[in-house]
Length: 288
Image 1 (cartoon, rainbow, N blue to C red):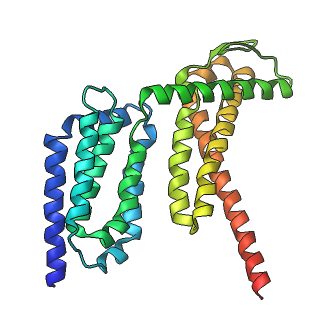
Image 2: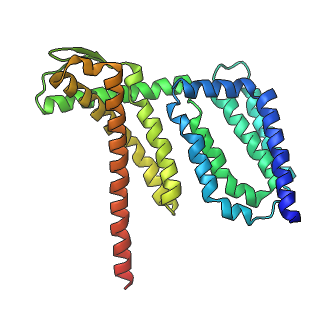
């Protein structure tokens, strides 16, 4: 009972500190982060991240309850100082990435200081997974987005030529017989890339046990994102050509984007489960 009460008091004190820092030190940063997520400014997937992180904590709940909290003030203070150092380095910048990451490091340092290394070990991945909701710095974001936009556009036009659909490309303008489509930066496929990456990290954490398997799952998210971008643009071309130019409108566009995203996501999981199942059967057969 004493240990349980001690742990509850530590959590309460930790919560008060985090709220205090979040309001009085990082208020502007967290407001900008929430605004970016809600307005889909390079972080539309961020809406799901806190729920996924909460699910990770729920999976670890029994192990955390069995651990006795401890103090680790020195490493905790070092992490807090490092976090505030990151905040200092971000002064004068309009980017939210470094100060938001600074808040997570400070939160991690406080958790280490007041709960100890054993509890922190269980909390660390769910905590730092929250970093995946932080938008990339704009120069990096636009550089990657430009590459994937060029790749998706080239791949989709090549695929249309392969099936002999009459399309013509002028830069990022794709000309169909009944409509001209502009492949804007918002249609680059960057959101696919970020979303697949985030969900691959979550899937690897829950479903894979070895570092090699987890790494392979995360790396697979990049080619899947490129393929999804090609298929999305190709689907829009086809629906515009065979159904009508209105399919390039906002609502049909969003519907096609979600359909392609979910189809590739479900397909990737199904393929991985099938391969994992066969490997499991093969290992059991070899052991017998």
